[in-house]
Length: 255
Image (cartoon, rainbow, N blue to C red; front, top):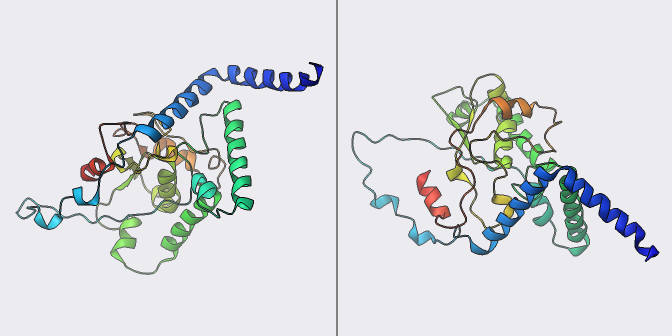
């Protein structure tokens, strides 16, 4: 019918755009399929705290035992957090969800190997939170061992991160001054990948491939592209956590 002509035209344009970026479309289709498999069949969360061995019962005495101090940095708010973790009031939640889905579709037809949901990157608020860490460290007058270690001014500290972009970018922004003034690298450890069945905890970066900043961060005032391309050590990144045969507990114990 003639009345449906605009719909047919729009559908034809949409298909043409997908065909034009066939490699990116195929790649993202595989990501979505994997996220569905992970949602329904993952064993990642099938463990209990009672399965964790009691450190008091471990034999860690002896001359060969070395001690390490671990400083944890929580990643900033992600686009997934912005969409799903803010107010659940339908007046605010539904428009956020529609906008997120629309932008995901835009990234698809544009041929971007990027995603709002999959390996969800930092939101603008998340970047701001990472900047607050950077500002705190640069303005701190304390001689705290923790601050000195984060700034790379004491000991032989190593920066490690999961293979998820929001964690990498939080380290890149929060510790930017240290990275900018040195040749230190952010070492990606897949054992740090987040424990969940949600698609935002799946890495968009293949194994042994350099990650790239999200569309939000590419034009950021700090040169994150330089850090991503030259100061991220991805040689230990085995890629995504498998759907079955592993669990978050195994990765915790590996770390």
